[in-house]
Image (cartoon, rainbow, N blue to C red; front, side, top):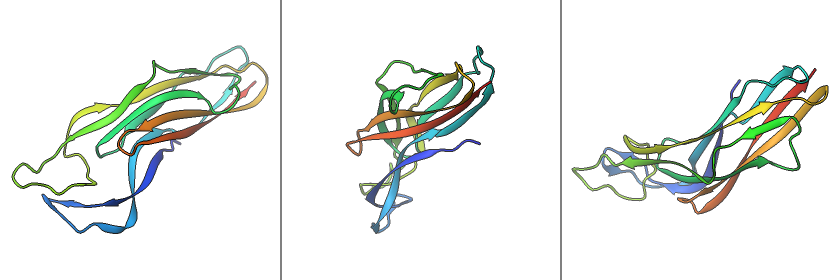
Length: 166
């Protein structure tokens, strides 16, 4: 089962209807920046001296405009005995650039919108392998550290890993 974690930040939003904006929602709403899939994975039972297949974790932009940099992929604390992280070079951009579809009439900013036309798209994928060194269940929390340039915030999400050596 794959789970996803969506970073959320309280903001005021304006909903785009055609090229006319509705009144802002004065209650806080949620704006997602990136989606990390999965946020938990069980490698199952792997024989001692063997390795699991590589499992991919992907950080991708949500449906709206996004500009994030993945800055680190490391164990959340200490080491992750038995788990090997194969992360491409960092920092790595994750984002979506949107082309507004309001060429005829001007749009009112700020907009909370879904891209009608995506002009640029970057995601980031890294791999994890489980190689048990002892019998028993092993857990590991991998921290994905990012910086969201649009919100001017550092963020972290955790991917929880489990595997059993036999």
